[in-house]
Length: 412
Image 1 (cartoon, rainbow, N blue to C red):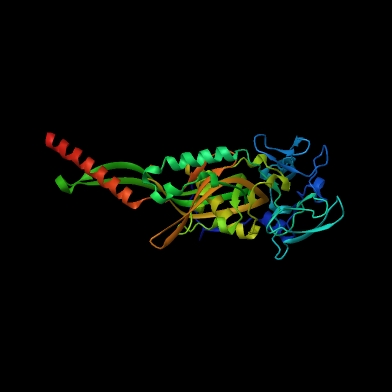
Image 2 (image 1 turned 90 degrees about the vertical axis):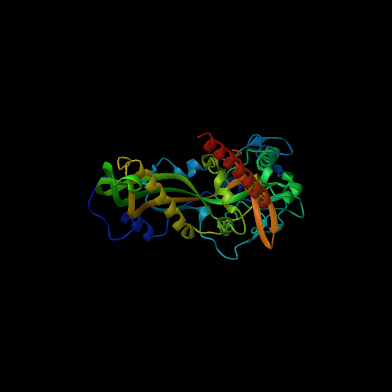
């Protein structure tokens, strides 16, 4: 990191020459498909039964016939290999993060049990039951409509635990809660949902330029009520260069969830329950979704690049901030530039317990959410508040403080 008099003409995101050369050809694709399940039938590896679901207390899949438990392989070694993020160049995508193809939702599967053909609308479900032999057929093929990701991070927080988290969150805000909400609040209506995310690794460089000041003297001018404090300072032009890597940055890949319109919903609460332990994500197996709902991804990599660049620039600023503490009068950043050497994109389902409440008042509607991280139990959300209760509390508090102030002045 250096101080310099040189400043670029404008701020920008510039391509790295090596990355540009790598992007000139088709981006390399890492195949993450679970080859063991390529016949569309998720069988118990011990007895061959297809009645399988997640056992949350252990994080393992369990066969409902023979009670055998197992887990799919972790995705991280398959995607990252032995290389370092410092060596990441160009855009690398996994097979589950490929661009979405319109009208790719209908999939015809051949039952390996009896040979019948079963049609599954993957836009609505990732499993179906053979109408002849009753085998459960699951969509493990990475259909290019965003329904099948590379990996899934299984739930480890049970439904009962999620209900208690939501109940505790709402109870702590009961005083100012709208009375209709208090009356209708039913945390048992919580729903377990797998939300689609892009998990991104990045190798980047950030350059920030600005002006910093170091105070050399402080004194006053004038007298009485006309006193003015004056500061003398040395002014420096500052330039900082930060090379950094980012491991497992999570970006929402559902346009509906990424809609942060605070006038109609409180989607932003989902981001407050981050982070997730994405290193523990496993290869896709539709059996992890049994008993839960899911949303399919509807955003391609290109659509998420601007959001990624914004977050990378924010990281660069944060890294540079620790080096300018000597400028006690502050630093004003005027220009910034980001160079992205390489990125790696992985599509992943992350677990969230979600409670929603529709509230309408004075003709204005709002959907409130309380979200629980399905791995850590971290809880955040919003509830409708009673305006008159807030106003009353403010008036009472103000009157109380005013009384104390008058009493103290009386003592003087």
